Amino acid sequence: MNDLPVVEPWLTFYQDVETLENFCLEELSHHSHHSHHPDASQSPVSPLLITQGPQLLAQIHRNFQQILAQSGSFAVPHSLQRYLTESHRQLRLLSTDLSLYQAAKTHALQQQRLGILRDRLAKLVQYGQAIAQILQESDS
Image 1 (spheres, rainbow, N blue to C red):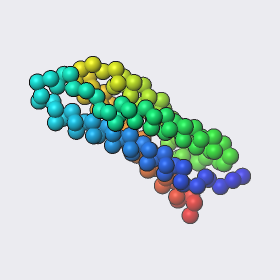
Image 2: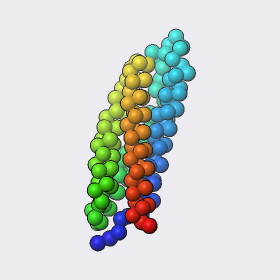
Image 3: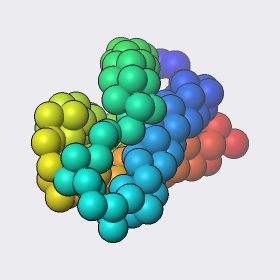
Image 4: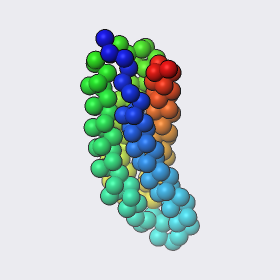
């Protein structure tokens, strides 16, 4: 039986999720600065979140699928399996949330969807940190 995989694929996954989270935070900042503008209800969505977000999310999904495939070659500790399952669930929901954000027509709905995206990404960052820690501890 092989040892647990190296930490690097997990760190790449975690860094990509953080980048997507930063796109979301930048958009939240943009919205808060423009919320008092008379045309705030027509505020355009973030170019980064819209143009790069879907591609980055697709990359995150590919990396996660690769990690899951690799996990079949070793005994996955229960603590790690729990994070894998929750991360997979959050990623599926994140795809839907991003689509709903892109379709939002009003500033209020965009704000609501951004909050949901931010919360989901924060969970994924926490899971990524926990997974990396579990792997680092098992590697030593």
